[in-house]
Structure formats: C-alpha cells, structure tokens
Length: 446
Image (tube, rainbow, N blue to C red):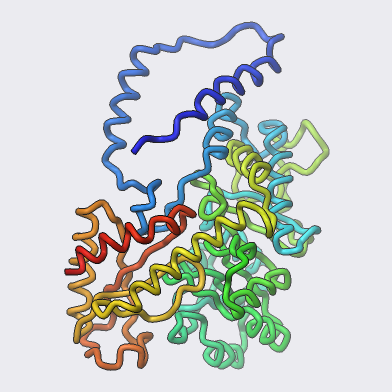
C-alpha cells in the first residue's frame, strides 16, 4: 500500500500562487535548517509507523475517517499564513470562508437564519449548546439517554448544571415512556436527542420527542456530531428518515465535520436556530475587535483562538463535494450504510454469530455465539485480537445486559454488561471491501 502523494505537487503550485499576493514585502524566509529538519522529520515518520491503519478499509473499528485529500492539502496550504479565526484581524479570509461553510451546513437543516460557528470538536460544540441551554433555562435539569455520549454528563458537571440519564429501549434509543414519566415530575430545561449514538449508531425518535416538547415546553438540543450528515443519505429506513427530517425544528444542533465531513481533527460545528442567543456571548475586547465593524467569530464563540486552517479545509472540501442530496458526498454516505447492511446480513446468516438489531447508519454491533454472557465476552475479545493479527481492526463495546431483552433468550446473563464486537464502516471503500473483511472474519471465527 502507498500513501497518496500526488497532491503535494499541487501544494507547491498553490503556495507559489499564494506567495504572489505578498510580493511587495521584503524577503523574510528565516533560518530554515533543512538538514536538521529532515533528520527529525524522518524520526517522526519512523515513530508514526506505530499506528493502526486508520486510513485503510481494513480498519473498521473506531470512528476514524481519513480526511479527503482536498481537506488535507487546503489545511496545509493555509498553515503558511496560520490564520486565527477568533477575530477578523487574525483570520480575515478564513473567517469569511468559515461563515460560508457553516451556512452550507446549516442549510442541510433548512436553517438560513441562524447563529453558528466551527469549534475544536464535538465536545466543545456540545458544551456551547448546553451552556446556552443553561442560560435560557437557568437551574433546570438536562436530560439525555443512557446511550448518549458520556461527555453530556461531564459537560453538565463542568457548567454546574443538573443532569439525569433516561433509560433506553432494546434498540438503544431513548425510551419514550421513561422520558414522559420524568417530564411529568417537572424541572426539565433541556432534552438532548442523539441522532447517531457513538456506541451503536442508534437514532433517537425525534418526532415523538418533538411532540413531548410541545406538551412540556423544554429546550431541545440535537447531538448529531456523528450522524448529522446522514440527512443526505438516500437509503435510510423510514423511521430514521423521519427523525432526520425533523431536525429543522430543534433549538440547537451539533455536527462534526471531522467525522463524516471528511475533515482533519479537530473540527466541530454548533448551530442555533434562534440567532438572538448571541446576546449570551456578548463581550468586548479592546485589543482584538478593532479592524472591522463586521461580526467577528470570537464574538459568538466561547473559544478564543481557533485554527483558520479548519475553515479553509472545510470550505474547499464543500466546494469540491457540495452537500447536495444527489451529489458524490451523499452517494458516499449511502455506500457506508450499504457496507454496514451487507456485513450485518453476512453475520446474521452465520450460525457462529449473534446480532441484536439492524444498523441504522453505518455502525454494526454483533458477537460470537455462546451460552453465557461471560463466554460471549471472552470470545469477542479473542476474535478482536485474532482479527488484528490479520490486519483487520475491529472494536469492542460494553453492551448493557439488560438491553438484550428477549433477543438472546437462551443466553445466561451472568454479567451486567457483555463485551461484543463493534465496527464503524465509515469509509465509502468499505462497501467494496466487505467480502475481504468477511474472509478474514470467517478464518478467525474458527
């Protein structure tokens, strides 16, 4: 296997073009000790070999999707300027690119009047969303499902907000009767709906949650950090499709371009349907916001310094691959889902394995067969390690035993959680590689 290197020639050409914009400045290339840089760089290259092949289809474990070559090369190009998108004074061009790119993401949810910006990742984006939630409904409780990302509880602790978890049904979605029962007790300020849990890829039933919102008047935040881009996928099941179709009605959305948006880490995005929440960000900086009366991104962000390179890379990628339902970007998302469905079908039809439910997006969970939960856990770990020895990299997941329900009625639940196998089939190439992946699983399953 060889890394893609053709774009490096384009980088040199683009650098020369960008350099011409500053030709009236005296030369200041500095002291660049190339021999010493080369020596250290080769040492770094040697150390970086000690990695799993996150970029390859044989890596089907965690949520690690390689950035598109367009994003990678645009990011590198911008580093010769190294803009800071906190203020227009530090990132004039890249701030405008960020506003354009974020507007294109907001348009996915039919939001054309909104407040939003990029962040360092989904955690920071969710922190801002819950911070605003706490400002709008001070002192009230945040609710999220047991399978929501663990950072919601931690963020709430950091912000001094009360937080409670709502149980899940046997498809790891937020349980609606349990949610309504908790809402009846009152004191709920915000409900977090997860559209694509990072554990199983489950999508909370947003239409039902919205009906409860009308009845109980809470604020609704959608954590779509992983799943948000699937609003473009044409091959979702009907319930999942209905959930994504309702996203325009929530109060805030988080989506991560560094997951399915083909961007380098870290690049998250937070969006608010009501632009007036910007009043909670209001502050002044006598030494930062001085070059323009136009809105500076730092005026609507909790973060100060932010890499303009992320905005440049995202803007360039969305120009190459527009966020359109009939475009290449959407077709690639459909490939990821088809890959998960194909692997699910193979696992389901093989009497050596057990499944729990069909994947909603592109995350699949399954396990080797055994009579006891402890045996399933042991065999899952063994298969995980055996596959890795053949360069197929999966992940394991601690699945709550009480959520298995009647699906594995013949299994003795002698543990509170079961170690099962989990695969994130996030690369479009995974669809073409399923047969090769299955060939390895077939061997190591024995």
